Length: 100
Length: 447
Image (tube, rainbow over all chains, first blue to last red; front, side, top):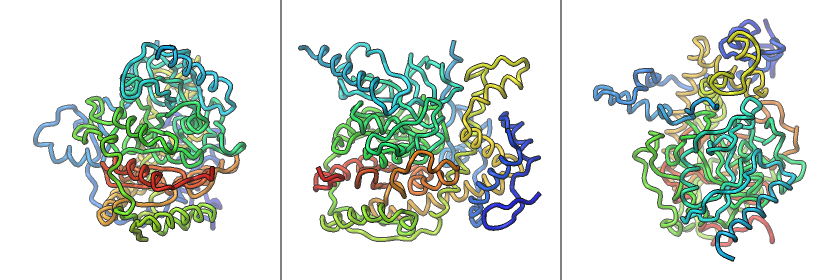
């Protein structure tokens, strides 16, 4: 499907089928699928300048193991990388019992 | 009249102001306060943004989904304020789950700008800045993920400090994007000593937020007089000024002339990656936000729906989320999916690293970066409802969050702020510098 966004006719990043799939994953209901897909695509199109960013060696994404409270010494290097590049770990965000 | 009676009367007077104000700056107003504690902030009256847990008070995040939720514990910042004698007047209005830059996106209605009737106060800590500007509270604690304290400080002409990432514990802050955000105080211009006392109270290590571990102990009051304009090198990111309106640039130039007159050293510099700040910020934030929002399903958090079946109950509960919140969840889910990850998330993380390095390098050659806080003056309600129109106003504030750097906004003119960004950990210096700028005679209004 092609749609007119911004200056020209482009292939949208998110089409209706993709939106249906991600809305199921996200557990978020979407009303007018075509309209929302077009709107989300327009936002990503505006952000497309990110494609000019040179490749860069990225640290490994934080995994469940790395999120353990007591990483072993052998993991010190990875833990440092993760701490420098990713958010703090357990206990730093809202973790409270369900309100009674 | 003894001190306790005096405090009670003062608190009651502010409470009446909050109840009768037309600004809608509060979602919940306290009935009173408990025992009086002697401390650094004895009797100082605070507002707390409604995404920061305060025991026994509602924690709505300005969302229908959380409208009846009462927090069973207090955030570290709230605990520390209360221990130092602060009095919490209530919970401030905000954009829902901090998703907004205008103060228009609250399920409890928009917040007004006390300086500019009919115009937005800025967001997402809209009520925090509005209540300080109106004089209902002495200070407030908001949160800043991409400018959420500096933007409303600019529009309401208050002083907002976004601390270095890790200087202030995020424990008890409902996260929008946990790698970018921090609780952040707001005071009136001229109250730098109070700001120093607030930071000396809330900053510092907290074992419940490991990113605070190893950070320097706060010394804001002790170092309040350290900075001097004439000893400071200011670097101006020239290309960012092109995004500002003429009115903003004029006021910024007036401030630059003032600095020159006072003997400051200034240079204009160019960056290679800074123009990518906006997409970088949003890509990282969408991803973290979509993950953080998974727990608001009507089962763990949020108002439970009546539908039968778990999936339909979750969908119905989450249908209470506002349009912008749902938009960010959808985009974050896509960006972190297999097909979106390499094109968006990995590029965003790479850009985050490049921008951070570039800012660090610029701050090795200068003491602070200097720029306007917002590219525009406050705009009319409804004027920037499209997402891209709203996002574009964050251009000048997001770089500090991307790099985890401290940043402070103070007034240049009514509705226009000046922003300083410092090296990581130089929060004390920024507060001291604003103090020295005021003492050197900088005024944001004629009277």
